[in-house]
Amino acid sequence: MSAYRHPHGGHRARMRQRWARTGGEGFADHELLEMLLYYAYPYRDTNPIAHDLLRQAGELSALADLPPERLTSIPGVTPRTVGLLRAALLLARRAAGRENACEAIDSVQRAGAFFMRFFGRQTADQTALLLLDNRCAPLDCLRIFDGRASSAAFRPVLAARPALEQKAASVMLATYHSDRIARADAEEMEAGIRLKQDLGLLGIHLLDWIYVTENYFTALSTRLPLLFGTGSAPLLPEHQQERQVASAHEPEPAS
Amino acid sequence: MSPNPLLDRLLSDRADTLTDRELIVLLLGYAGDRTPEQTATHLLEHFQDATGLLSARSEQLCAAGMTPRTALLFGLLFPLYRRCAVAPGEPAEEFRSIDRIGAYLTNLYIGIQVETVYLMLLNERYRLIDCIKLGEGAVNQAGINFRTATEHAVFRNARMAVLAHNHPGGVPTPSRDDVETTLRLKAAFEVVGVTLLDHLVIAGGRYLPILMDSRYPLSQNLPDYSPAAPDNNPDSPQPH
Image 1 (cartoon, rainbow over the protein chains, first blue to last red):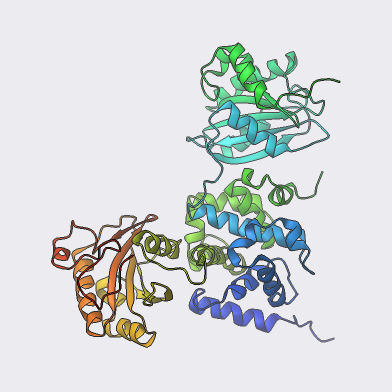
Image 2: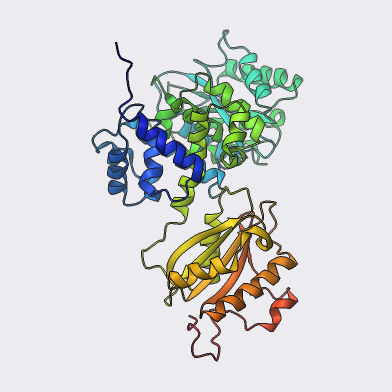
């Protein structure tokens, strides 16, 4: 039985050799795009797809910002393809310093907005951990637990290990409340206090705990300002903080 | 829950919440890496940040444990982005200000970690004819062959040119050699009727135009190139 021969293997090998010789000099836009698309299409000829994408976008620079549905309308282009384009161009844009890689999360408002975007709309409670560097810029954000941290199954190591592995200077936690009430109950407040103490023993600073629903958020620091200090919360009296936080996204009044 | 929550976020309006590390994890997945989380952690430790990772040469990426296939993917990103960044806003865009020229050339050097010399050729309407890589190395060494540079300008019918080179070390301060080379090239171009508008030193996302900078005594004997200041030479391109 004869060995399988990749239908485009010769062409891809020649492109890679040309790339190795020239470092991209002399490559047309569609050729650069064609090579990137190799990673979305292991066996398919990506040259026509590259041309179609450029035709749809108008130019290379517009590809990352087009709505996915504009691109997936092209035959053969899948959400996975669009994901590759976006990830590639977004990372390059940030690395080039032309775009801040996630603004610093240095206030309750920014933390709340970040987590609301992170969770989006969910149907079940879940807890996430945001790792920050010494400038409060995000290093990583992980879903670490299905449920609320007041659950007996939640363990401090779920937050501690990622923080230690990635050398985070500080962390924030957030819990999505699927019951649409973004407020810590007594058990959650106790869990927050315990976790802050546990992480503090390891030199990990827990800045705040944000409670999120689809429409609004609150922060544990507003309930416990003395414990959480000035790490993330503005220096406002508690009642003003409650009003400030609640005004970000007011819950819809009950009908 | 979606099988790939990172991809879901990337395709939604929440893409800005993805960290650099998460984007690297996603890309490693496309490259077939079986442990993208671990690999991303290792790469960021090795190269400090995404800029270091994307600026690394192929052999450096492979030395850090990447397969050649994965190294090629990450090696594509800056060249792809540079192509996006230097695309002219309009086909007939005119480069009539040092700011516009500086912005274009700064983008051209995104991610380039070796000293590289480019020659930007403009026609009489300040429109870009081409931007040619003259070489790698310091400006006073292998970077510039005056004859080659002049040939490019003459054969492409350029009326004006801008020279540029980068300082990968991050400081756009020109050396004495840089200034002297600028004056010599300007004189050489004048022989064939091409005006060297300036020589930009690019570093750390900034640029310094040698001829316009009054700190360099050698340049004070030359007529200033200033797009806002007309000179008395009727053959010179009219500033705007």
